[in-house]
Image (cartoon, rainbow over all chains, first blue to last red):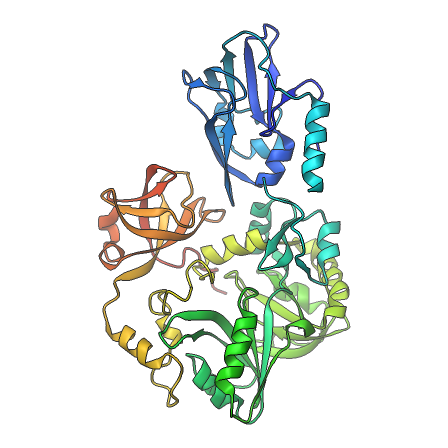
Length: 132
Length: 376
């Protein structure tokens, strides 16, 4: 199970990569999430310009057997959507932290959103879920 | 996210093998079954192009034996079991007196007085009880023998070639929907040339103690040909492409075989009376008010079980099953719709849609089956 150290995580199995200025973040779903979903066939990401709210559903990841909501990890505005994932949704499975990124947000406050998990905290959370 | 360890589900003799292969396990009808081993799309494609290996030990096997077996089944089932030649099998159904489907079945006639009924995992306890009830008073024994069988299936164009390396049986003699007692990889087995994928293949009935011998033998024999293990997710997408119904989705107590487009299994003309005959005869005469159809999605979002089908924006039916089709490269689904919609053909263009989580996604009618295996 891959959980890169340098990223931040949410309880809903998204990851954030915070840019140096801490005002923008790249968002995707984790390796844990893509394994649970199975082969991704379609991603409905929020369009550029959309206002998103932390903890609220803002899109969907559809796999062969199911559909899961994507929750916004922060308050802000979507600036960009990954065009590669639209052409090849399988990137979410094969490279969830790299080429399978989903969208970018301009974060409102310019600060790290509260409630984010570190890699260690996220790993601990998934291990607890596995044992249930 | 799906629970990876459902509590208290029954284990097949191959559960540890699946876990050792890293399968994502799921509870299906109270059984711990492999949903997928890696990519269910890869498993599906392997069955269409090479072969897939399936653990189907959760299915039920009910023996019906004795001089009165044929007559008992002619009465209990909608098909004509007495007309099946020994060594052959037929797809059929067991219906309630009102014509509602209790289960869809494959009936294997092993000998003149010996039948084996294969029933869905979710239904076989009910089916065994119904058969025993309907056979009461006849010179026949009905016995739920599900515990005495494990079932491994190999499905795909490479199946016969792979299986041939493990058995002295001449597989050319085992025709489609025939069964044959055999020895495979040293294991006593009943071979059946049946399946739920739309491909050539074999379902192999064995003693549960032999499952952990046969599975690796098949896996190894098929490795060079591209055989891989395939789970229930692939099983479902394969059968849907092949236009085959799933009990619980397309079939239920609330529908008759005619509603599902499977009136061919009801032998109204057989001499015997049978359970459901009057209701089914009436249903066969009446124009249907709803019909099972194939639907092709025109966007990339997938119609799912329970989603409304729309005609000019107004609900006219409901999706029973839907998947993204790996073979067709588009979403496909089956649905019960109003008979007028089912007859629309190309006129459905621009008017037919599926309500996918609040959004009306355009769709079209597609004749079933979506996929037929290439001839030859």
